[in-house]
Amino acid sequence: MVTEIVRPKTVREAVEAKNAPGAAYLGGGTWLNSGRLPEEPAILISLEDLGLGMIEAAPGGCTIGASVTFQQLIDADPVPRAVKAAAKLTASRTLRNMQTVGGELGLCPADSVLIPMLLALDATVLLAGSRRPMAIGDYWLSKPDDLVLSLTIPEAGRTAAVRALSRTSHSLRSLVIVACAPGEAGGEACVVLSDCREECVVIREPVLNRWPLPSREKIEEMVRAAFSPVADMHASQEYKRYMAGVLAADMLHELAAGKVR
Figure 1 (cartoon, one colour):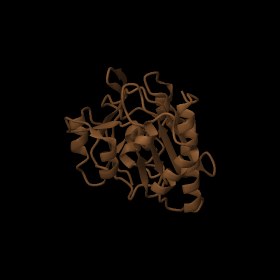
Figure 2: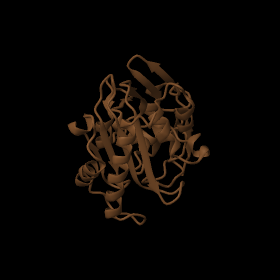
Figure 3: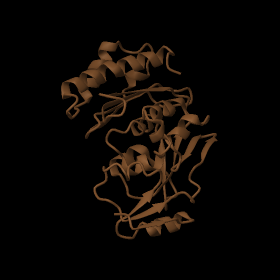
Figure 4: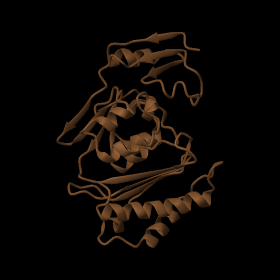
């Protein structure tokens, strides 16, 4: 039961407030009200006065503050199209207006679409108290409890596509696939596969950077060999593996043909 809401004016005050038993950071409140946390917080630390709502284009890429909502990602020009596409897969505009980047990274939900996209684009995460940003892959593996300040997506001129499978637009996802093509300024082609339960695999093979690409059949074989998804009530392991291969091959070939912008 929530007994107190704290409104710090600085990041330092927010971090200090988090040391209290039962304290949790409050952004949009989406996950705090979802029942997906291990226990209900007693103290909420509002981030509204910390100035974390920026979206800034820079020579090195795009920096996005932790308080930016999914809808703001979609509406802001500096945000890469691929990130906008990932945010749009949260079907409810009401949720998109509440759900924040920091909240998504703070909880790291197993069926996230945004995080696999950030893995594909080699994003970095800046945490409170850190001078250097952390690679999103390291963040995903360690899932630190530190306050997320921002994330940065490097500008490499890459294009990416994303697909997610679920029974309805508002139900839990069973599979998320991201395909990313190499860019003129660098960055490798890759495929990111999430079974929305336990496994998230990043495939970076030199053959994916060549032209012409391998056939769809060869890409499907490569993806299925690397992916061991966990079944859920909506999709078997065999179905997830089969669809991962088909969708990854389709997206990579669409990217190579310039059909995804």
